[in-house]
Length: 230
Image (cartoon, rainbow, N blue to C red):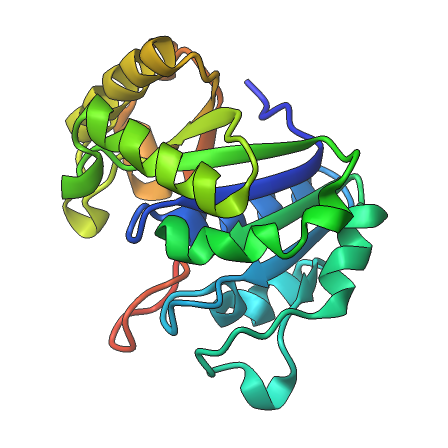
């Protein structure tokens, strides 16, 4: 099943949910499918593992990435390029906005309220049920409420991203699907897709997955590891 998303997609979630890895891989997959993609890195609170760390991959894929000025790429400061407002007002066929974690990261969206006015967007919460803060439905709903309050925007969909990085198994993916299906039912939010690492796909029966699957080629890795080749 293809991931049927277009227009403006805002990716939010708690710290460590994997939303930036989702952003990068979704952008590259859609670009390879022939979709014109732009990405904005609005993670202004976490100096590590931000979309900008994959800017070479995105550029080589023909994806326009909006970043802070070059001399401030590694700063942890509230820098918001006016280009972001422009790309929201006049979005590409697919415009993906990667937002910082928790309510602290989502606050930046409230500063873009005027740009978002009269614009429909998919604001999707990335959920990793193998993380302590989101291993219960109540925890996920609490994160949702905090993010919506800070952003002054509603979350309207879910992304399941169950993983333990290198320790993830196919069983973890299946359990994650069951969890986000339950979360979807209790929250009323549709499950748009789940993720699975490329190296796990041979062990996963896609017939057991009731929604599209985004293949993850891990790009945000520690200095002693190499990013996975797409």
